[in-house]
Image 1 (cartoon, helix red, strand yellow):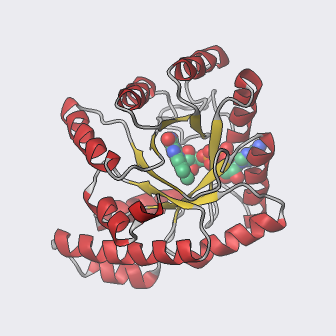
Image 2 (tube, protein in one colour):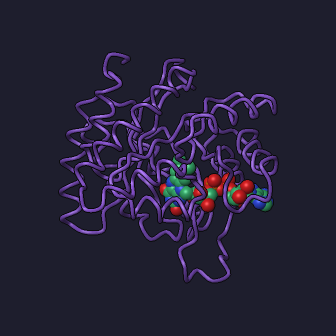
Length: 283
Ligand code: FAD
């Protein structure tokens, strides 16, 4: 970690599209803030569609006293706009950024602004020096557009060499995928902290759809078990909490330098997992 060697625990939000969603997220933020995570992060639409939404949420929760890291990508912005956005974050005392290529929304056609994340890290370092702590994404089960495992890690290494301070993984349900990935990265002289991204299981259909898109594997045994819950949302959620708690226990016992929870703007499951792991005692 850049400023401290202790484990880091964080929650991710996405900018809601409606006023009702925002009001709900304010409640979720207030609830999760009580757990005193190291930071919250807020996702960013690669087409620039949520630029304002991301900025507003980031500034609002920063003003409320939370440490908040905006996600950022080139999508839809030119270098001047991006530099202004970085400057505005800096002026508000925001010092952590999650730098991504992002996923192109359908309809972006030629993807004229398509820039890889290593280029974004280089750009941030060029225009703001060492000011920001930069997180990047990485993929223990390989990014779906990478030809090979090695190529995927080569591209990850470019982001590290460009100046990333730490990484957050795509979610996974197989601890070995993470441990093998960290080992392989170490053999390639990647020494930044690699924090597992943790996706709670709250809705089987949504999880299956996300996972198919982002290349995260749902192990067959888990898929079978999840499919048995049918309309029993409460049963599925409780089972999901148990599975994900055990995954987190394995990861922390094996030396993971923290956990980043994809909250999906919901407090219940992540709070339960946090409490099961007694993470407040590790603060
Ligand atoms: P990159 O590191 O640029 O990699 C993209 C792909 O291109 C990979 O297959 C890589 O191997 C390959 N590649 C990299 N460099 C090169 C090169 N020079 N030449 C050829 N191929 C190359 N998406 C959003 O839209 N908004 C978000 O806020 C967001 N937050 C995320 C947070 C986390 C922690 C994670 C894990 C993912 C997030 N995503 C988000 C999804 C992410 O944007 C996608 O996975 C995206 O497809 C890749 O982003 P990246 O930053 O890893 O891209």
